[in-house]
Length: 527
Image (cartoon, rainbow, N blue to C red; front, side, top):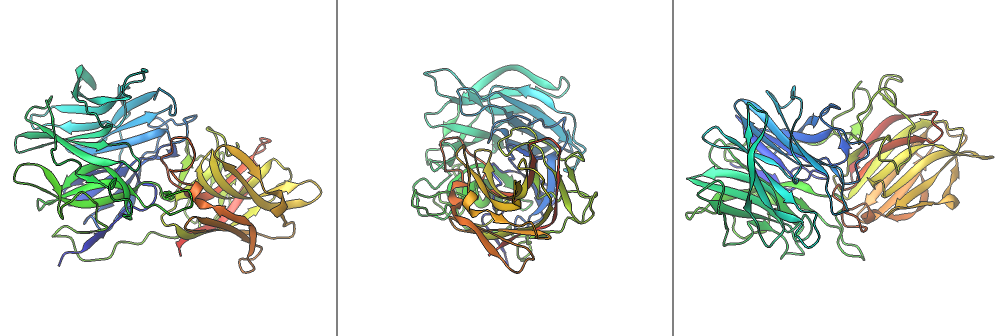
């Protein structure tokens, strides 16, 4: 009996999935944008149960994100396997929200998914979303979206192809634009089947108009024929469907010859201002089939993604594995579900050994900084959930702060923090930044000078967020008003936003003395 794959297979912020099978195992890599380490990888033996396998870009020589804009950084990595090695190409985008992208594309390889990964090879800067195609004749090709900054020209200027030379460790020859299209196209991936080259594309932008489009050609360099059936996958015409923004996909074939499409989608929450996707872009799987005339279709027909998909025939019938909900910080290293902003953790500001069983953060720059923040966070995976932590923090100045953060980016976040107020001692309250505007809620401050420890809690209920605090973990007191959780979404504000909501802990010391804040545990559980 065949089991079922339940979508999304990777809930929360797991966008732009790239999937590959190596023997009996599947590996799935996703974008990480400004979060460090870069390129999260999950592994599975059956496409049903997935476990975190760590990050690939976990060394400073592989990833330098200091100063990159919000929602810039690592875009759309593409993972492949060839000549007994893993290959990863990825973009680092340094500029967004202007005519320019300032993007660099790199290649690294490794004998195993856990590394060691090679030093990065610079490829080009012509556009983002690179992927590699290893042809049957042994040649390797790079395809990527081409960006055009000029006024009066389409920014998405087609898909370019260029050969990669293994010996030269560089691209060779001239790039060829193999497809231009009236619709916005990006995220190219090439496949070869039955004498044809197939080009899988993300179309329509990564919002509500998103989709997956196929084109094919008898020649690698084209001309490419667009699928006359239209989008392989989209929800643009199904506004009430639970999975929205479906698009940006990659294919994988099982050992038994079945085909699956990994793609992104979002699950919106209804608000008075329209639907908003608090969890960001998540990873889903669909079963697909090749038709007799050589086009790819969803196995059940139509173009709307399914919430439940039959697992591969050889997959065992078993429930998906549960994600751990609590971290007691007993390990000397951060769990791979945690990420930091733009820079790697190091002993100068993060320690799990100075006070065993506690996470120690030494305060650094403000929550508006694009450089040196002391913040660790994990993506929200459900819109009805509760985050809880226990903190020991003794500030002596107003410039020292620490607490529980509900985060979208430097321009939008809610912060339940402890600080020092002259004449009052330790106080607990809420500060926030709303689409770039900083605000404090001083009327809701609570004096907590006599609290031995500070228990902090954030409860998400759809579009509502409520903070509370306790001196002992039993006597919980509400802090502040009900907040609009839907603002922590890809769909709020005027800026480009791609990363979904996160929750975590952080510390600031704006005087530069790096006052420590200690956290005894962190729990994130679905309600």
